[in-house]
Each structure stands twice: as C-alpha cells, then as structure tokens.
Length: 178
Image 1 (spheres, rainbow, N blue to C red):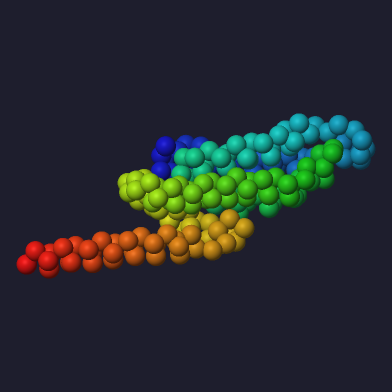
Image 2: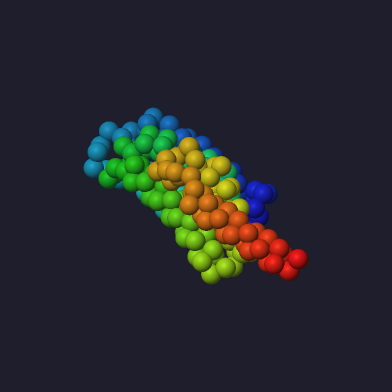
C-alpha cells in the first residue's frame, strides 16, 4: 500500500459528499418529497452510502492512509442532512458510529500487536507497530472515542526498564572482567 497518499482515489470521500449534496438539492426541489410513502429517485443510492463509507474507512486503515481516514471522520457528520431524504430514514448516526468503530478497532488491533511483539521479542515488528501507532495517534488524538488516552504510557516504560536492565547487566559483566 501507498503509505504517503499518492493514491488516485484519495478524493473519493470529498467527491462522494459533493455528489450527495447535489442529490440532496435535487431531491428538495422535486415533487417526490410531498408523498412520504412513495419511493424516491435516489433511495437506493443513498441507502448504500453507509456501506460504501464503511468499506472506504476499512481500506484507508488497511493501507495506512490515516490522513484520509481522518478527513472521512471529519466529513461524516454532514450525512445527517440526508436522513430525511430516504424512506425509511438513513440513520446517519449509526453510519458515523460504525465508521468510528472500524477505525477504533484498527487502533486496538495495533495496540495488541505492540504487546504481542514485545512479549514474543519480535523487535522489528514491535518497531513497525509503534511507528504505526504514532502515525494513528497524530491523526486521531482529537477523537477521544478512538484515542482516549496515549497508547504508549505502559509499553514505553516497560521497554525503557528492559533497556536499563540490559545496560546494568552489561556494565556488571564488563566490570567483572576488568
């Protein structure tokens, strides 16, 4: 995956929101809104937007495109404008919650990867996971439901203690050979 964001689909979320806004304006100006039980022109498209946004958020996280995931999180609350345009209602709050859960799940998975890599002494994997978590923290720390606390408080102290312990053992070993 492209970790620096040179993907041509990076504007998918913004383009999708513009299209939704245009559809919203068209529907408001049409006669279809006068009959509440009648099927509307863009019902199927609007009902599918939640699935498309969830898929997009999963892809962003899997491809480590955290900047795009952050933009998606920022823009998703605007979906509430579409709630009343579909029959039955769109329930944008549920869509927003599920996108947050997807991103939060990925963050939790990385935290588990850090702990697992440390306990199994896979230091390269540990370094990769820590680097990944630092990137995620820089993008999602303003979302307390995703990053409630700093992730590194426990693992970094554990690593520092281990390094200090190894240093003391090395000093003791060197001083005993002198």
